[in-house]
Each structure stands twice: as C-alpha cells, then as structure tokens.
Length: 187
Image 1 (cartoon, rainbow, N blue to C red):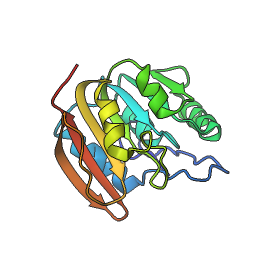
Image 2 (image 1 turned 135 degrees about the vertical axis):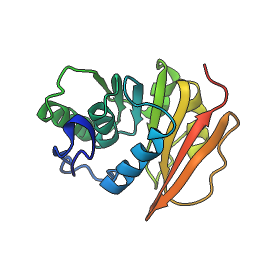
Image 3 (image 1 turned 135 degrees about the horizontal axis):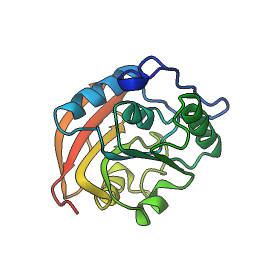
C-alpha cells in the first residue's frame, strides 16, 4: 500500500502483521475520498481526526496533503504500533499528529474540535456506535466538528444519518460506500 498524493506520494504504508479485522482503505477509495473533498474543503491546514484508524492510511494521506494536524484514534494496540511505525518511517515522527489508543465512542465524549473527520468503523461489529451503528456514531461525531465535514466509509447500503447532517456526496467502490456529510449544526 502506498501514499497516493501530496508530498509523500509513492511512499510505502505498511500493514501491521497479525492485526486481524483491519480493513485498510484501498488506494482507489483513498483517491476518490480526496477527490471528493477537494471540491468541498481544503485539507491544507485542517485539523483532522481519523477514527478507527487501522493502518493510519487516511490520516497519513491527509498529512501528505498538508493537514495542519491529524489525530489517529484506534483501540487495537498492534494497529497503534503500526501507525507509529509508519509515521516514523515516513519521517513524520513528532510532527503534526497525535495517536490515541482508545475506544472511539469514549474518545468522542472527551475530545476537542476538528475540521474534518474520517470515519471507517468495522463493518461486522457493534463497535461502531454503542449498538446503534453508523447513525449513532455520526450523531456523536457531529459534536466534535468545527467545519462539520465527515467522510464515512461503510459497506454499501442505505443509512439514515441523524438530524444535523446533509449528505453532499456518495459513491460506491466495490464493497465500500463512501458518504461525505456536512454538518448543518456546526460548533
């Protein structure tokens, strides 16, 4: 897996061995996400949160494209070690990022504010929002966004996002549905 754009374009992102259940965002989907964002908001200088970070590919992509700061949130310790290793190998150690080893819902209750949120919850678990799934998770995320822009990766299907969100773009890439949402009740 490689960074697909920005200053780190072409550099390798390693997948941590033995991290079952991680589903890294493919290059095709990452390119599509950043193409969709390009027409809606600038990543350059943005304060970004990468929820359910896994390999950290989306947050690393944002850093490569000039994000001001990225917070990676992942509860799998092996994945957290892999994110740190990737950031170090990409010579980003100590620059513009924070890694939080925590449950996403717990993090959302005690976090600060962000411009853009990447949300890529596990497809096959209740971990994505206290049993309420993607809609409950999105409702919690709305409270941490300054500019109110979220990119939500899910399996294809219909999702009723909670009040406060407007779906501005939606595309399906194989087994992945990408929704870009704008909050209408910003902080």
